[in-house]
Length: 403
Image 1 (tube, helix red, strand yellow):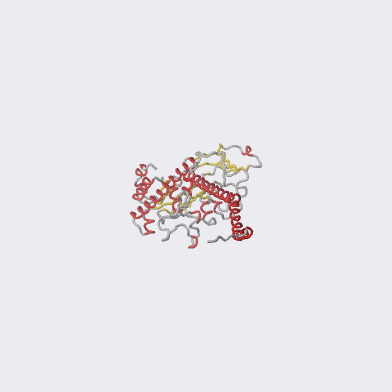
Image 2 (cartoon, helix red, strand yellow; image 1 turned 90 degrees about the vertical axis):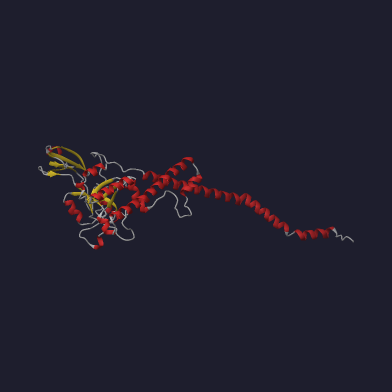
């Protein structure tokens, strides 16, 4: 068989035609690789690194936020000074409605709730009693910034404190549209620790001035007694429109107005016996079970919170990024991640942690005893029994409870 040979020039042309479409593609691939390696890849890796860094910062931020809440969960209420310091300030005082001058109540008969002491001068400044001394000549107070009121031995008493009141949430005159004392409906049932009297207070209630005129200067405003747990109460000063702008603002009449909200006292209203039984058609046995079941749920939440707090502290100390991520990242089961919290149980958990004073509307001896048993079972302290009509029958039982 013969061999076909081509002249060199024709061979070159043939090769050129067969390869001229390949080299541009090959070159383009090489160029793309170089572009990716030296331009796009570093930028991509940088972006990935930046995203990872931002995620890490976000996770640590959530961890620190949760740890701060852990501290708050276990912080007990600030203790009042007993006796109160005469150098203290009154955060309620303001120049528009406070005493701008020092006031001397001269020649007073002072009744402190136990004894009467005559011939006293009582000195006020910026809403605070700064001294009580023996009566002196008015010349000692001869100063333009001092107002002297000679009582001529009339009686002076401390303001009375009503520890169980519903004015401001059950307004006077009583109207259907302003009766907000009991959260009673099928949706919430007999346990409403999560509601607050604060959200029902009507600061323009006309009864407030009448109550103050009777000598009651402060009141604990509590939800009603329809529910086993009625909700949180708030202390008020019966001095409406006392803020800087003389408006009917709820914050202005709170006793602890001007005090940081995290340091304010908290009060839980509870009831037992016939009141919640009548409202929700339960027996006393049913009331007890419903309450204990709620407390058991609350204890489980507290245990979850305490475990998270310990784990979060350990993760931060060790710098374990995977553990930090596990503690703050929402799970596929619907958990939000971070410190376990339930708004429905927040007040109940605070009660079991000793952050809320428990005030119980309770009539009969068996109800008093039952509530004491519950307090021992779940570890909350009863601050007071209210309307305890039959407490006189069991004084030794109450004393033996240690409350």
